Image 1: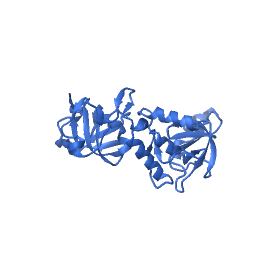
Image 2: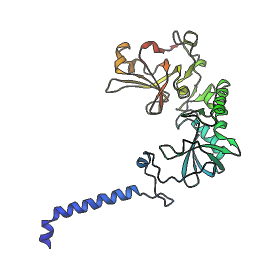
Image 3: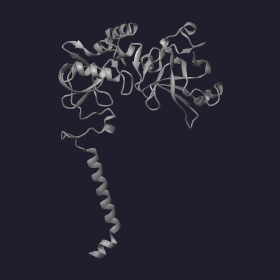
Amino acid sequence: MKKFLRQNKTFFAIIIGALIIGAAIYFSSGQVNYNGEKANNFLENRGGECAEIPNLPDGAEKLVTKVIDGDTFVIEGGYSVRILSIDTDERGYPCYQEAKDKLEELILNKKVKLEKEEEEDVDQYCRYLRHIFLNSENISLKLVEEGLAVARFYSETKYQEEISEAEKNARENKIGCKWSSYVKTSDDESAYSNATEDKNFQWEKLTSELIGMEIVGACEADNYLYEEIIIQGKIASAYCSKTNTVFLNFGSVYPKQCFVAVIFNSYHDKFVKDPEKYYADKTVRIKGKISEYKGKPQIILKNPEQIEIGKAK
């Protein structure tokens, strides 16, 4: 027997190794949470299958058991719901806590009606996509009216007109955290979100009078996606990558920045030498069209006329 084992030890080692790997895969894919239910496998769910998510009929009423942030919550059974037609600040951004607190006040431990759109059921994170009503009140509309959320539409929705009008009214009248002239930054330091009210700097080129564009604070940029605008803020960190791309981060250091100005290598020869050093820690204004990359608003700088350093008074 010993001779047999010695002669076949390589074979048995392979078999034992295969059993160990198989067991590891089985247990890692079938982890159990505290409720005794199989935990969701995020990588599988990202494919859009969401096989473990049960059908949620249009108009279903469910108890809200937890609020994640200003536009996401959990219902009975442990399933997440993302509110349609709005967007609120993520953790670390100025209005995150106020929006979350308000949503908790409105719906936590209450039964809400979940209304769906024809073409939207769940997202890539397996969250139900729904309009939310409490006693016939549209929660999306309520949050936008109070200046705690912005309108966000990826396709035509049922309540697009009234939500858009509510945002316009909140913005024009500076209602709530998103639109008031005085808010907290992501570092919990007081700062003006409305850049036009900052009297500490003077500007020669990038002004509303000369350019004819609105000026907003850097951490408000996500409210103006795809618009031509002037952004003002202090550069919290600057970095030049291995591909010679310069990133100017506003609001906080990477990865908590609220806005980014980007200078690609192909435009470097138009700017000063080492722009990541030249603009670091400066308060600047940037002109351009706001785009989005990996969830962050940004402006691509193609020439130095798009950026101006504020002169301290």
